[in-house]
Amino acid sequence: MSDYLEAELEVALAAVRTAAKVCRSVRASMAGGSMQKDDRSPVTVADYASQAVIARALADAFPDDPLVGEEGADHLRQPEHAEQRLRVRQEVNAAGINGTDEAICDWIDRGGYREYTERFWTVDPIDGTKGFLRGGQYAISLALIVNGRIELGVLGCPAMTEAAAGADTSTLEADDSAGLLFHAVRGRGAFMLPLNTDSSDSAGTRIHTSEVSTAAEARLCESYESSHSRHDVSADVAEKLGISRDPVRMDSQAKYAALASGRAEIYLRLPTRPDYEENIWDHAGGVLVVEEAGGTVTDVTGKPLDFSRGPNLSANRGVVVTCGPLHEEVIAAVRAAGIG
Image 1 (cartoon, rainbow, N blue to C red):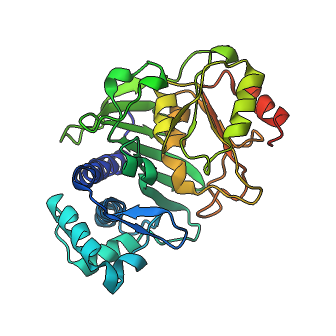
Image 2 (cartoon, helix red, strand yellow):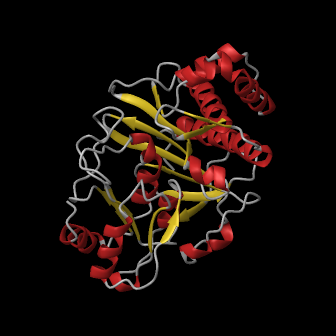
C-alpha cells in the first residue's frame, strides 16, 4: 500500500478518536451545557473541547498547516462563560491533554484561519450540533485539502452502529455505545472501522456505495432540520424519481457515511435561500469518503464542489450526493423541481 499521507492519516484518526471520547463524555453528562452564538445556533462544551484536541494534535504534528474550523474561542473567553471554560478544560484534560484555559482557547482559535493556501486542514468538531443535543446522530469531520482538492477525509460517527451496515437508513438509530470511524485518502479507497478501539492502525473494512441503479428503489436521506435543506423540494424530487418510501432524516455528515457504506443511495442538501453558501467544513470530510467508496458528489447543477475558494463553497449551490449510477437522473430531477 502506498505511504501517501500515511503520517497525516494516523494523526487524523487518533485526533478524531480522542475528540469522539470528549463528545461522548459531554453528551453523557450534559445538563444545560450549551450557549448561544450570535446566529442563535447552539454551541456546546463538546464543540470547543473537540476542536481544541484536534487543533492541538495537528499543531504538534504539522505546525505549518493552517486550520479552517467552525468554532472560535471569542465567546468562551468572555467572563460570563467561566463555567463553560472550566468544563471545556476538564474534558480536554480528561482526554489526556493538559492545558490552561488560555492555551485551550488558543488551540481553538487556530481554527480561525480563513485565507486560501495550498495546504490546509478543515474541521467541524461537531457536525450536527442539534442532533448531538437531542441524542441523535452527529459527526466529527476532518479533512486535508491540498491545491484545492480534498486529499484526506476522516469522519467520526460516535452514535452510528456497525450492525446496520448495508441495511436501510431507517435502522440508523443513535447508539452511544457503538460508533464508527470512516476514512479515505485519495486514490486508496474508503474504509470503516469501529470507533471503540485505542489502536492507531488505519486499517478497516473497505466500503462501497450501493449498486442500486433504479431510482425508484433508492433510499433518500436529507437533513433533519428544514432550515438546512428544502424538504418540500426534496419531496418533489423523490416523486419525480418514483421514490415512494419516506426520506430518512438525520443530522450531520453521518448522511455521507450512510451513503458511502451502502445504506442509502441519495442525499440532497438543497439551498434554502438564493444567497446561501455551504461551509467547507460541513462537507469536506464526507465528500472524499463517498467518492472513494464509488459515489458521486456535485452541487445541484452537476458541478464538482470547489474547495479552492476559502471557507465557503462560493462557486457552488447546494449539494447532491449519490451512489454513482443514479447521479445524472437525480440532477435532472432536481433541475425539473426548479433547483439548479
